[in-house]
Image (cartoon, rainbow, N blue to C red; front, side):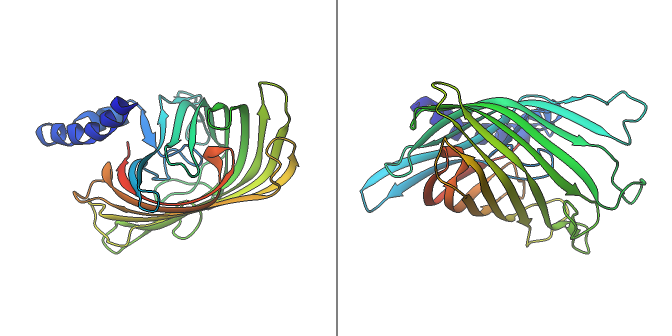
Length: 298
């Protein structure tokens, strides 16, 4: 595991050095190959800019150091209607993904690995300055995942289906509010849907929720080709419909992040994150944490 942490620390600096020599470096190559790296793939894979994180932290109260890792890897992307005659009006995309979330601290310890398939479906086109369509278009996101939670000794199948809205208009969901120079300043995304978590090992039960989620990001330093500072906010409230598995009732989760990109490129930066509530990456364990570390995004 120490080798894994070392790899994640050395990778960004290697990539940055290669980019200086070749403008079409590994980051651009990975993006063209539809390979992505994010914190998690809950939400829009193309729009939400949630960098993966490797955080090294110091617990001064207990005099110990600990690590946190939150990473999701999108392997590829398949657009079902790419070559269809109506591909300009509708889109159905599937992509396999893996996520790894770990916290080595004594409090809120976690070690969870999941793998599955995500789906994103735009049934109608949305209007842009150069194309016709709906001013506010519906779209669907779904996923099926197998998750292994080592700390809680729990194996689950997770199913999610969300309805969201998307627009190209500023201050509507998905719309980019821009400064006078054209740079992105603010946008947000809203989701509402159904989640089900079923235990696979001993048929202990299942938990299901009506889930509502909000994600916002703010770029307070307008720059056309640079991205120096990103502020993020995420809140997820899950209303319990059935809870034989976790036995927690209604659960919620909030996180606030500050991401600084010294070079103006959002592929590599430093992040500060505060989160509180029932951690969805840790079987909804009630937790709270303040972390600082390295952010990576592809």
